[in-house]
Image (cartoon, rainbow, N blue to C red; front, side, top):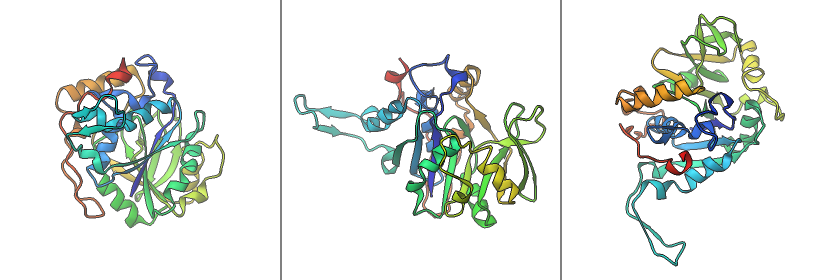
Length: 287
């Protein structure tokens, strides 16, 4: 199963942290939050990624194009630009990352539509946002979605705040209020799974298509959007305060998403265990 990550937004509320990089590249413990998200999925056997790029897409492309050089010891023969000898094999060597430019101003639904061609051979695919981390049991989420037979399943989390509120019954979402005045139930925490054959009936080729307002709302109306209830850790990174809190949590050694045990994914292949610490991967971008 592939993971699609929405990485194209401008992140205007967190711009004070850095003007030099897009929000998914902001580091937690020296590694981009995007990397932490991908490591979580890799622990559950999902190692094929499609990144929907937009704002400052070059920063994300540069990171992955230079990834092995940044994390491995290497020997460079001066005068021979292409001659680099690597002395380490990174744990992420099996990852396959598609860097798809989906437009700087495209909305979330339009971004997903633009990567449809990379999902043609899939039965199901995962989808999440590039600015939220959690200790979601991705294996259980995928299993529940497949068993439900629904078009989509999203992860509902409990948090006081400003996000789209969900009401549900019998593991189906019955209403989706994008911006309620008061939140009393669960919100859409991302970490979604969709039927790769049927989900496109809810899309159209518009760059201004907002995924949360149209496709998700229509799935709810058809009784085709399920909910995976997650009561563990979940945190988005929308503000400098949240950025600081996530870094403090990582520095404490108690980051829940980094302590997720090895899982047995749906395809039966054991995923790699998550590291307790990440290397400093983004010094050049952060400066």
